[in-house]
Length: 116
Image (cartoon, rainbow, N blue to C red; front, side, top):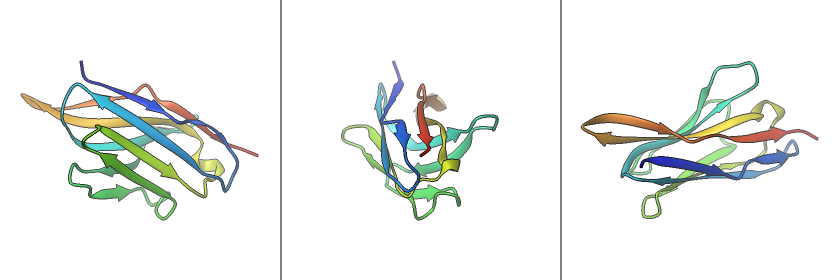
């Protein structure tokens, strides 16, 4: 069974740091990434990373967030620094894999709240 399990969400003060982790299992994964959904808004891309380690970021998080992965452990992480109130939302891990065709799997989401 292909699945993703996120961890690391919680309450953080503005300007603080938080690290999200996602453990993937059941396949070998290609691109992996993090998305977020703020209250009342659509889900949006935060960052992605290829199996080779090439990362892309949303403009809103460039210079503050860092995505990384460990292919041996099938994990992807998101280091969030200098967080802002607008970073509040449910963060979802996403991973692509191939089974006869390209497929995607999502984690259950972890809530990040940035507030003083």
